[in-house]
Every structure is written in C-alpha cells, then in structure tokens.
Image (cartoon, helix red, strand yellow):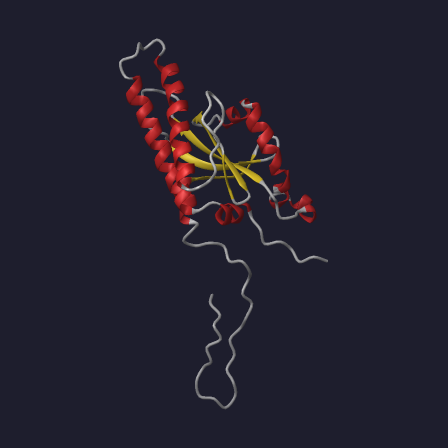
Amino acid sequence: MNPPTKDTIPGLLLRSIPRELVLGVEDALNAGAARAYTAAKGMDEGHLPHVVGQLRHFNMNEAFYRALAAAEAAPTAIQGNGLVTGRTGVFTLARFNIPEGFWINGRRSQTRRQMAFANKAIEPLVQPELFDQYQPPAEAVAFFVACFSGSLQIQPESPTSIQIAVPDRYMRRWLFRETLDVFAKRYDVQEPSQIDLAVPKLKKNIGKKDVDGTSS
C-alpha cells in the first residue's frame, strides 16, 4: 500500500506560487480598481455603475498582466475581453471580479469553466471518498477574486477583499478560498513536509543531553 499523501490544497499553492507574486497581485488589483474609479468620475449617474465595471475589467486586467510579468509567470497577451492567465508551478492563474457574496458569477465565463476542469485532479484532497485516487497533479487552476461592495456608495474605489480561490472541476463550489492577507501569512508558517516522530533520549553514563537535531 502506498503511504498516505500529505498534500493539501494550501500546500500545493504555497509550493507553486511565490509570496512575491501573491503580494504583487494584491497591490496590482487594488491599483487597477483605483484607476478605474478615478477614470469614471464625471460620467452620468445613469450609466456610471456600468462604466465603472467596464473600466475595472480593463484596468485590473492590465495590472494583473504586469504583476504576472514581473514574477515571470508567463502571462498571456491582453486581448479585448479575453482572460489574462499566468502559470507558476502546477497552477494556471486567472482573475475575475464579483459583487460581494455572488460567487456563482464566476461560472458565467465558459473559458473559466473549461479551465477549472483541471482541478478534478485535486478534488480528492477535500473529498475523503476519492482520496485513494489522488495522484500529485501536473496542473491545476486558481483564481484571484476581487470582491466589491456592489454599490458605488460603499468603497467604490477598491475591493472589499481579494481572495485566492480554487474551484472544483465544475466551478460549483470552492475547494479552497482565503483572503490574500491571510494566505500570505502561511508563507511564514508553512505546513511541515513530514510529521516529526523522533523522541530525544538520554544516553546512559553521560552527564549531558545529546542534540539530535530534531525540532518541534
């Protein structure tokens, strides 16, 4: 019997995505949202929400592209309304915006749904009944999701949160989801690669403890 895997979805993300990329994306998306709101000022109230939404898409796409390029994460070219994606480790990365709480909106893009099917490989990590089918993935997909208040009267210039989210293969539920500020702290306390079961012992007839190099 093969030994049980110690992989987790957060662990896979940490091994694949450098901290600098996570922090760079967070700064970039906030900056892109701020530029979009500034550019929309002065437009008629009747279509201002639509204008802000469109400008967020374009400005945040450009900012996301630059963050991926700075981290050498192989960004795809910016083309109209198309998705910008990057690649680091086993993860393909993309982004989208939603009003706070409307996560189902992520399924509206057929391209995103097609991308998400790769996550079939990592579903066993959160579905115990499939655990014996797990093999380390060659590819997976994660999204950076900027959540906005849904009203131009509440924090219109920036997301209320930016999250890293890993969907199931159908984008019907989320295998993992966490705000970037919380996720970034995981780099300081990464999950151990194996459980340390060593127990230090005292040798007989020696008046001091040995140092065995283990740590808790």
